[in-house]
Image (cartoon, rainbow, N blue to C red; front, side, top):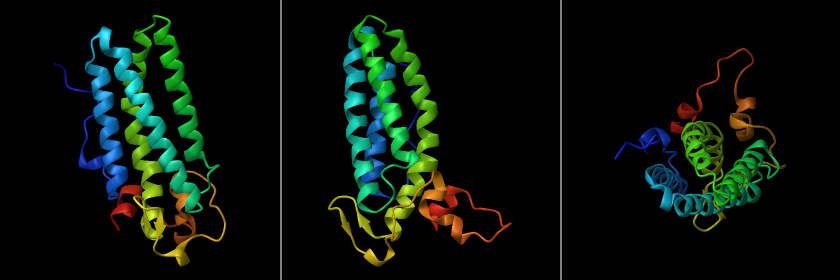
Length: 178
């Protein structure tokens, strides 16, 4: 059996256990799609799409409940990716199975970028406000922004104001580790 294009690694971990577990499940389901024989491919794909719909809905709810702008580009990217995955399902149901293999390869490239940018900024924000993803409790309500934040990536987390003009911005992974 060939090695999956995307393997779980600590480089994908964001120090938010529920998010990390969900991301690890995504990687495993994507690997199952890659390894599936044609007869099992559509079933494995559907499991990935169902998981991804739940995964994105959960993150979108976290963003909304912590004023991380439900209409921001992170949520928009979730909607677009999910729409494309569902279009892949329809194409495969029409007999075009190779499209799922190409989509899986693209997901293996997209996911680390999404995780290390948009999800890393969200995880940083959730830790700052003391958000417990399991219960939905915000333990530091005073740290919540007064208005829903807008923007993409690190800009969503409010880090822009913390960087002096002309100063280099730290990579997101360094900011998450801080």
